[in-house]
Image 1 (cartoon, rainbow, N blue to C red):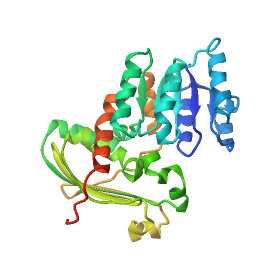
Image 2: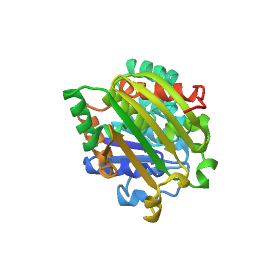
Image 3: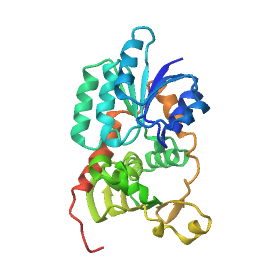
Length: 299
């Protein structure tokens, strides 16, 4: 049984709590600046909890002398990931960090140096690489490599809170391209090869649209957090998310199958087969390039 610390107990943290529990490991301590963390009772009611950073660090330093901390799961805001990964390494724990690992390629370089000079590994969550439908796509592309025409639409509505939180601050989150797009960009690069050209048609706080020329695919993509962009059928069903991936005019259904992917990610990390800095780099570099691209007005 491995001992975990968890930093950040917002929405995504429950998937990490479940993964730690389902892999039969122990959550030793958790920290969040807010104390509305009753979700801990459903998973690890006896773990220590702190809302104060200095008390949390003090616990880690003192406790490390008697109980080894093996892994440090990070579910904090994007702009804090680098410093929190550094914290994990300083207490001798492997880091498991939510997407994006960091916002800029420069931060990746810093993490690579930290990892090289420590005995700790830095892992990230690229759960789409474990989705059955995506794995099948990867296998088919390896067996029968050819160039495809792809259309990706991902619309997931967000309320007014979004723009008044750190997620609405591009400097803290990386913007919509990072918040909701990076998993899909990672998936496409993983399957269809390196990016040769990017074209950006639209980029705002709520919408992004563009085209990628990959080694084995031309991809038209659209991202939105605006409910008005949801198809009527989705609105009628009172759903807030729409995912559509069309490959050579064939629709790929991958709306379901997301529930247990974090547990699969953890199983692979614990078997020392997790995804790390090198795996994260292509999508982080692509998003960074898109954020600094000139918008093409005609499309």
